[in-house]
Amino acid sequence: MTAKSLKNTVNSMNSSWWNKIYTPVIIALVFVVGMSVGRHFLSEGSNSYNGGVSKVDRILNYIERDYVDSVDLVDMEKQAINELIKELDPHSSYITPENYHYVVDPLLGNFDGIGIQFRMIRDSLTVMLPLEGGPSLKAGIRAGDKIVIADGDTIAGMKMNSDDVIKRLKGPRGSEVDLFVRRSHVDSLLPFTIIRDKIPTYSLDASFMVNDSLGYIKISKFSATTIEEFDDAMVGLLRLGMEALILDLRGNSGGYLRAAIAMSDTFLEDKALIVYTKGKNRPEKRYLANKNGAFEKGALFILIDDNSASASEIVAGAIQDNDRGTIVGRRSFGKGLVQEQMDFEDGSALRLTVARYYTPTGRSIQRPYDEGTEAYYTDHYHRMLDVEKSDSIPKSDTVKFVTPQGKVVYGGGGIMPDVEIPFDTNFNYYFYNRVIRNSILAEQAIDYYNQHRKQIDAFENMETFAKDFKLGSSVYKKLVATAKSQDIIAKEENIDRSEEMLLNTFNAELARLAFGEKAYFYVYLQEDEMYEKTVELLDTSSH
Image (cartoon, rainbow, N blue to C red; front, side, top):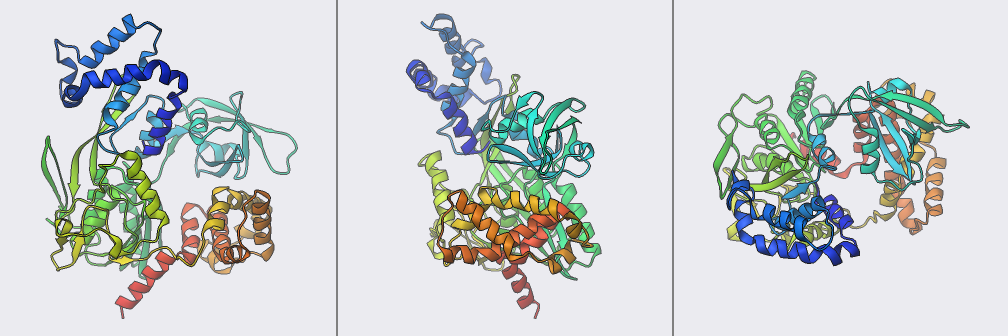
């Protein structure tokens, strides 16, 4: 669970009525439990101390039995757990039964559902893409369809968030869900009965050859299926003659440690140290490369940014500290903590930080969190907005480390790239970001595709589409007009400078609809500064 979703869960319980009645009880509970529960709550057998019953259980039972008013013990227990862990670190978290599958399933590699990518656009659930082979595509659901009713519940116009929608669409494999759908240029709602099925969730977004020798792989997370997907992609690219690789980990917030270790092993020689972990009650454990990696010699570039975290940073740190490749981009998030998960019988779980991980040179890249969780994430937010140069990173001998080839690297604040590519301070991203975030571009791209489907599908593949397809100026004029109608106001200079980027993103959305997910990235990268400069680096180094 992210800090944001955890905070929203807690806030939803904190009505003024709740505060007046229960906050004194919660404070008293946490105060009484104090350090004793902190020591025993998660240790093996901790639920059987003090005569076989913990203080938490005794106090909750006492409140339930004798408190002056009726109480909701489940909510009180949830409050108590959150109070217990909130001062530990930003990444220890409690997962409620309601949120368990939403938090855990994305890393499992599959879920049971109807198989669509969707987006909430002005309180309407809009299908962005029915997944290939999924039950929605088989039933006839199209991109651009708006799901109005699901099993008798009206969804459109109800101001539901994505979590609420997912809960209505997911369900046991083999179960049915009745949908009523609004489709462009069709007067009445269309009925569909969809049988839920196993839906694979892929962590590899794209893999393709940029040219005859350069390959590209984009990984969105480190899940249970990541290495299988990654290995298959590597085999395919090597067969096509790949001699150099761009591994894109931008926006990848992490996942399973073992997946990061296996991926690093692909690039490192036998016995090379990948990462090691240790904690107060976890002895040091070292992870070494132990196989003949498929790509130990070719040129390697790893792209990272402010949202590359955890497992992404393990891979980047292993490559950087072993002098194996070049890290390109912006300073990563800075999460060097390892969590273990304890599942409870009621369907909830606790993720507790049990160790820190260290890169091969011995650096912990964990950012400081001594000022609290809110300050921790606020710092990250401001760091994304500010233009950061390498000389702005706090550096001292205590966090200074040296790689085998003599390169100086620093810990304590994420992975600093070897080649830094900061945001362009001369460009104002406001208009571009608002058009994307308000889903104006996505919605108009779907409409355009449905109107010009034959023309777009006539292209042989994503390569010919990227090379030869051109949008007319009327498309951008419509985007701008729609943005202004939604009170997205910007200087004309900013609107003009955003045109090339927005039309490229529009093209990428069309490519996704016509040729699949990887086509989006193939087209989008045509105007991606970090990607373009990485290709230039490779060209320079090869001459």
